[in-house]
Length: 97
Image 1 (spheres, rainbow, N blue to C red):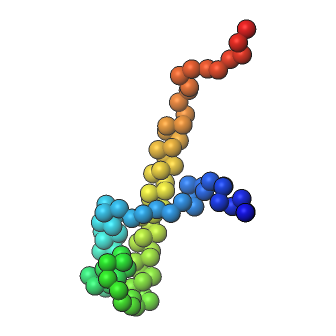
Image 2 (image 1 turned 30 degrees about the vertical axis):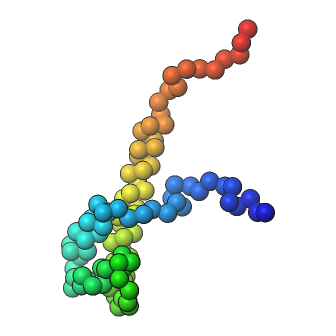
Image 3 (image 1 turned 45 degrees about the vertical axis):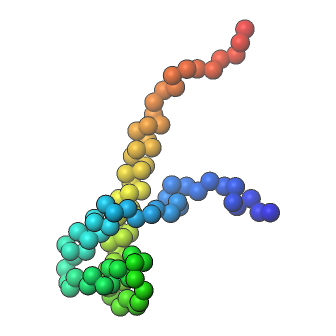
């Protein structure tokens, strides 16, 4: 058996599930972009709530918004981890005498 499964993924490699708040952020980002808005039906397909095809230009627009949201989430996780990992330990292990 290969040992690939035993390695822990780095934070940047872990999959991130889109939350409702992240999807709302995507909607806001997409609305702020120049050009035509993506139709609601295309959003449903993109989010996996419906099936169908997505025109390439709309797919690129949605993927761009998703990538921004995912990058923001990863950045927030890194900040959280750094903030909580700098604490000094509450006890210290020393050799018994």
